[in-house]
Image (cartoon, rainbow, N blue to C red; front, side):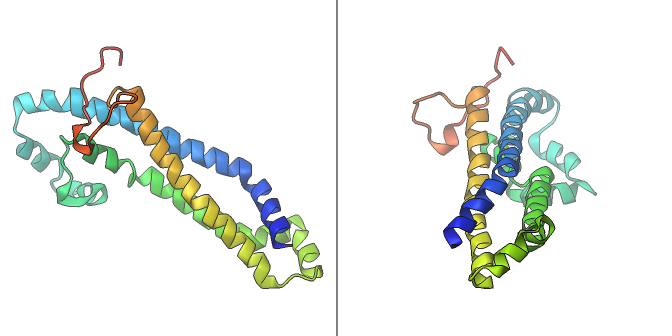
Length: 184
């Protein structure tokens, strides 16, 4: 009976999961383009006028310290492609999407069954209440890695599309280039 409930929950969740996964992956694709623009086009122009230390001092002075903390602290280098890509994972939009997803799943787990009128049917079956909660937990154990994989896939697709990675080329983590793209 838990397997049937699991399949029903997965069927009910497929469209919201697809939409959220596409949002997460799409934002990471966009963030790869933003990273390429900052590291390859914008930052070199600023570095013609001032040193990197002066630039970070201006950007992260006063209220900018909060932004630096959100980005990853003092260890984040704005001129590093990998560091700039990691900012996309802790971006406030990503945090908001994950919070809305978690709150929606938690509140909809039991309350959603009551709203749809299926809770009475479930509880009328010879099924322990813990099995209902276990089925929701199993769905979350399946869904959370899917959401994380959508972030990862969006980053890889974005870096491939903007030219930071070449297909079938071995890439060491610190060899990602952010060369200016003539088409972009």
